[in-house]
Length: 292
Length: 259
Ligand SMILES: Nc1ncnc2c1ncn2[C@@H]1O[C@H](COP(=O)(O)OP(=O)(O)OP(=O)(O)O)[C@@H](O)[C@H]1O
Ligand SMILES: [Mg+2]
Image (cartoon, rainbow over all chains, first blue to last red; front, side, top):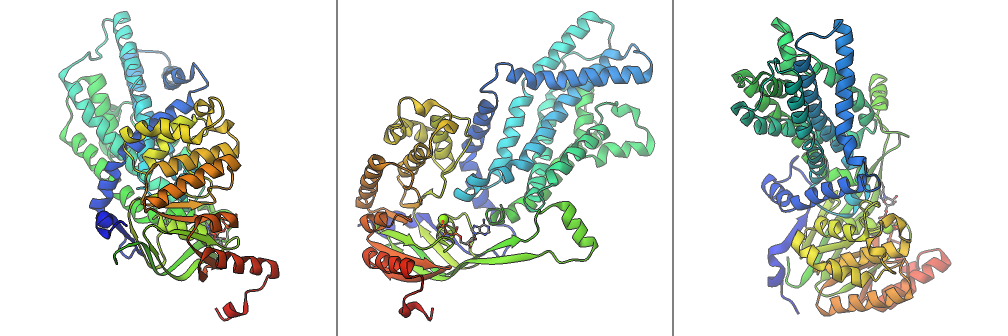
């Protein structure tokens, strides 16, 4: 007969929750100990999505690339012809789109992960943040191969137009990991927020398709951050991805370092989004199972 | 928690909140707010004031009609639902096989689903990978199905796979909700064997089943749940007998009338 001693370290107590947040340190520990689950879930979902089609993965790159070219053509037509900055414009557009897609798919897929996770949520106990987290990882896995594509466009472009001012590889590239981490946190926080909303209001996701579209037009992707002056510059800072996308363009296109405002903006939005989204999600996740 | 108890349930109540709106959408919520309507909610008391102690090494059967609250109780013990009132203390590692299994990606192979299932229940990648072959062998799916997408499985094959994953976790407490219903006779025999083995290792098992023979065969204790309350507790034969009588007659035995 086993004694209580064998099990004593493992006693778990479930009680009605009074506090709005569960104890955070055990929560984070539990999350961390199951991170492999989120990583593997992302890997397997990726695998399942493209199991049938050889061309599948290529679409991930082709889609933003073609879209970038379409937008570029539209811009050239609206401006009435290309100028000597054409290549800069195209590159700015491409890297902006690639990066924005990473954020967008983190938010969109993450927002649905809870409502689509039905059986898993009803039948397994684990920190629910793992599901949106897994979507963020999957979005990152899909984002990575677009970087070499961008570099290829850059190299070919520079070879055709040697006179272009666009930057090559430089020390400023060291900012890139910082920018990507900020974008990842900002998007993950928003994913948590919208995932929670989606449990209560099932049309959130429909709304989100419009929100992300408007969000893209308001972000410095189709236009250069330097084209805003005076009060309009505020637009770059009220947009959660504004500072990060500005930074992105500075580093990749202008080959300059980041201004203090931009750095503070990036960090501000990453932290704010994680805190707000995390609070909403974690304080309500214990209700997900009875509402799904 | 006293020595030798696996699960202690004290005055447990669980309520579901169900919205009566046809669609819970932001649009409807805004419409209601602008018309100053209350949202129509209904509460369903799935489990009411239940108290129960389950010692280590016991095999407890739970019987009751549809909607009695059996699955709800299991989900609460597994930590998936939080109690509305009362307290549940659980002593040991839990493995669950609740209705319908875990169900990951139906486009993935059985083998991939085993790995995801193991990771979801908290095993490390090395642990589950070292067990995959053993699990696949136990599930004993017909030729090569283990490497085919799960969507090509019959429900029994799916049930076999889920059961094999659940028992392989070497849990201290195993929760089975309608887990054995889909398997064929051969697999049933094999899974009974495995559960007896788990009992012999002094693990605790909770079985919800509408196949009453399962309860009488495997369990050494049984409870009967009715509309969220525990009507009776006792030897499986006795409980199943009373439950069957109730099913045939359709009224509760007079001794329970006042409950
Ligand atoms: N997700 C849910 N949302 C709202 N109500 C629910 C939910 N799940 C169960 N209920 C309600 O809770 C009550 C108990 O359900 P439960 O699934 O625990 O019954 P059960 O004993 O497992 O029944 P069965 O034998 O059919 O599996 C039922 O009245 C049911 O309508
Ligand atoms: Mg049930």
